[in-house]
Image (tube, rainbow, N blue to C red; front, side, top):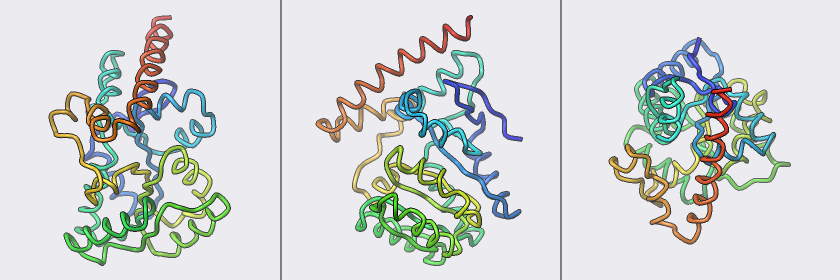
Length: 248
């Protein structure tokens, strides 16, 4: 049984990165399926008004907190999450697990040149044998079932989906049955861009104090400043509501 707490009407797993990896390993060994989603401030905000996204997220077996603000909020409300589990950190840990246990991974998402660089990087660092297949993330909703069927036929134990929200969450939710022989799947957001070197990840100290969003704005100011201004402001509003509701 996965220990969970409820924040913003979302059941978030109160487990560590290592515990999450162990759950994935057990699912593969026992041929079970686990659907994973990592939520951050922006996703929590969008879930408040996007019912399809909300339903897609809460259907997952494991929902990890990706971001220090959610960890801080959990402590503020007296139901502490032990640590944040970011998509990129979990992905890296599972690639190492796949190399160690001879599991196979399918990489879905990003631009063609980016996903190819990710596959080449992991093939060189570990082994090409961990790669079940890959394709870019540019396909229409009408092509979803064909894409999911190709993944299911690849022999993958693990599926990483690097597509923007809410497309990746809804894709996995709608095609869960077609992916029934894939033991573990998760959305990894922009992790392929980080692994390929297209974008840089924030320094460790900025990650620890919850300033990764600021680092993204510094890298892409025109695209990111408005997005973070709106989501961070709305998050404060929803946090106040959460505190008032709990006191009530």
